[in-house]
Every structure is written in C-alpha cells, then in structure tokens.
Length: 88
Image (cartoon, rainbow, N blue to C red; front, side, top):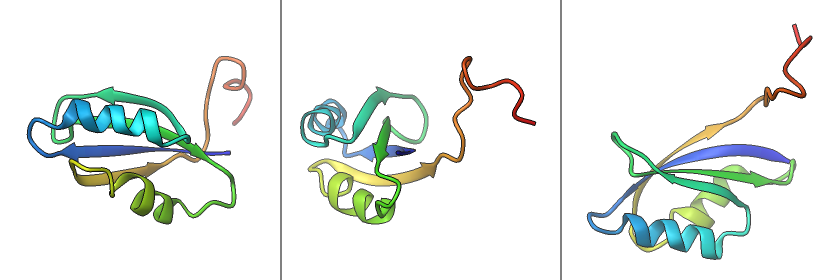
C-alpha cells in the first residue's frame, strides 16, 4: 500500500461537509483532520502500490462538492516505534 496526504482548501462554510463527504464516500481514506493555516483539511489516504495517485486525487477528491484546491504529499517511508530503529 502507498500512503499519501492531501491538504484540502474548501469553499467558505463547507469544511465540515467536505470532511464528511470524504470519510463517507472515499474508501481509501484513513483519517481527515481539520487544520489551521492555508488549507482547511489534511486527509490521509492509502492506495494499492500500482494505483495512479494523480488520477485518484483528480477523480476521488477534487470532484467532491466544496473542494476548492488541493496539495498532495506522497510518502516515501513510515517510521514507527516498531520499524524506526536500525534503518541507517
């Protein structure tokens, strides 16, 4: 599985509706957080290794009513307490 995050800017007054729509309709969603700053939401997704992330963002996230803009961050490695030591 490939993990990635998407910062999402919403139309004014639509943040909670967008968050609900993502959680309710996008099965690849892991978490959605409301955040401060330039963007309104930070959502984590996981897709199959061979999935086209750009196409996923375009079809599954950017088409949600109330989404104004996105910025995608693709993850390389996950460092966790059970996997974080001895990797250098």
